[in-house]
Length: 283
Ligand SMILES: Cc1ncc(COP(=O)(O)O)c(C=O)c1O
Image (cartoon, rainbow, N blue to C red):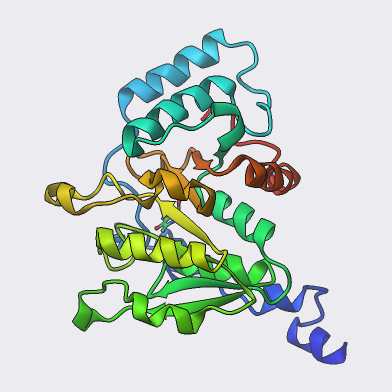
């Protein structure tokens, strides 16, 4: 108890939080606000503004929709579920049920927090690539879990090496997290390697979590990009999280969605409701 209090300089803060660090890019962003004309090399804010048609739509909704300022249903607006189901089918070829498989989130950060809190019992393990998006590490730790690092090698062009995966999996492992194109390397992971990864996850009863803010940013590499969420036969093993933040320059609007098996949505919804009730309806 004394040790704990010393560490927290007498604030009654949990060890779990004391042991976390504010992400370095957010710290840089906060510091840069104090410097006039600082060039931002910190977090990935879009270089363009939210498109005008989105802003006009919101202006109209503010004028005309009586309920715009109120909560939506916890899993999001029904009309948006329909649009997302159509978008997901266009993107992946997989048909999903708007009601049962889709949850509207306040962006992928919140989606991932939802998921880790849903999946993790104390000391459970989540496999993340190394390097990975640092917030995943924080979120896993904050949920009481342990990140396990799947090393990526620059000499192997930052590709996933599935031969290393079996050694990382044990009875505590719950899921593997994939970001493709990757943050921070920009790597678009190879199709067959991703298929092998989902198959291995499935064999071990693990989930594959896809955190996808970046699939629009593949430029001339269209033919290289593969979304594992398009593997219809693997639907039960995959959770797909999409963010509107980057592609639509809506990072401050906080909105995205998750596509997942119905049984899992029922569990995730409890966490979502307990921490945010619903994504911002206006967004
Ligand atoms: C891999 C990854 N996931 C999630 C996010 C944040 O997504 P959102 O703005 O939807 O919370 C980012 C970037 O900010 C990211 O790079």
